[in-house]
Length: 88
Image (cartoon, rainbow, N blue to C red; front, side, top):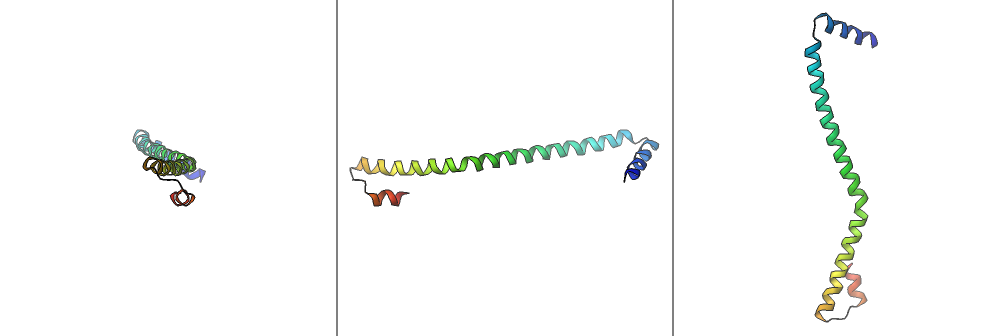
């Protein structure tokens, strides 16, 4: 494999294709870096959501329960254990 790479380099130098090959390689490398950045962003976003989901679920459940109890208090009804259990 090393021999094939060296032969390829020799051909590129023999025909003076250094500049065109550099452009092709640079274009491919820039595309690769763009894709790597997008992948890193998506992985980070996924990690953040996975880390935050227990907190978000707890917060949402508490908010719903608090609103339910607050509504009972505003309308003057008594809060019953069955009502609280059904709200969760």
